[in-house]
Each structure stands twice: as C-alpha cells, then as structure tokens.
Image 1 (cartoon, one colour):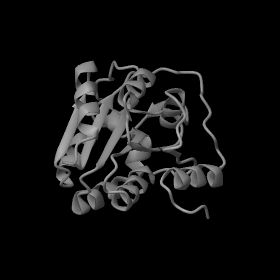
Image 2: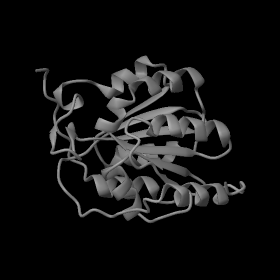
Image 3: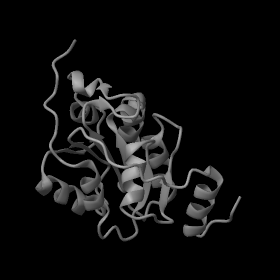
Length: 198
C-alpha cells in the first residue's frame, strides 16, 4: 500500500455552498453521488447539470460545455473517486485549455458511495500533481476557507483552465436528491442556454 494522505478538515457541504455563492452566470456539472447532493443542497438551479451514473465523465462533460459556451464560466464539482476514473480527461483539458473551465474535486481520500474504502488519493496518489503534469495552468490545493474563497474568485476569470483538490473531511450528510430524470435535466439546461429542446 502507498502512503496515506492526511485527511482534510473542510466540511464538504459547506465547501460546495461557498463555491456556489454569488455564482452569477456559472454553469455547473456535477459528478455522481455526494457532489450532486451537495450542489443540490446549495440550491437547485437551471444551470446545474447533475450527471447521474456516468462515473469518470464529469470533467469531460465540463470540457464540452466550456468549449460550447466560451463566454460562461463552467464549474465541475466532483469527487476524488469519480475523477480518478476519468484521469485521461485531465490530459485532454490540458491540451484544449478552455479558459472558462474549473474542475473542483472534493477529495477525502475515500470512495464515499461504496463504503468509504480508501481511494487512490487516500493511498498517496496526488491529483494536484497529476493536473499540473497534464498542463493545466492553474492548480489549487485547497485546505482552508481562505483557499476556498481564492478558488471562488478565480472561477469567473477567463484565465483557466484550473483544477482544485478541495481537502474535505470524511463524514456523512443527509442525501439531498437532485432530479434524476436525465431528459428533464438536459432539457432545462438547454432551455437555460436558449437552445431548442430535443
């Protein structure tokens, strides 16, 4: 086994709420599980796209949206387990360099949705170093409220892409279940963007 990381201390639900305060025109993609629950708990919004059941796809979904909507900030909120499944996406983001994209990973070093087993980041894999090595120009290692506020300010800047590992504590929150009807979520996002309903 690798070296275990130090578990973070930030409360994940409070961290997500902080990121989404004064979100303005920000479009949000969430990974499955806790990141979706926390984003929904912070306030449902037509500009939220809850990506149920597509583990590993959140960052690439964010990339596509950022390319399609270059004038709008795009924020992906996901967990370490989900991002670990989609590591190849970080390489593509590093090559494409969409200036309006932020990937925020809630990293507690555990697979929260399957029983709190240690994840690869909990065993020493460094997502911050991986993002940096993929050519992502702005990388944040968020360990406190000041770091969260710095990240929140950066989300609206057009100088990304950026990646953030937000070091959260382990712990449970009551599930806040966002809409799970994929057609509904897709159509309301399209309507929000002024696109025809499919």
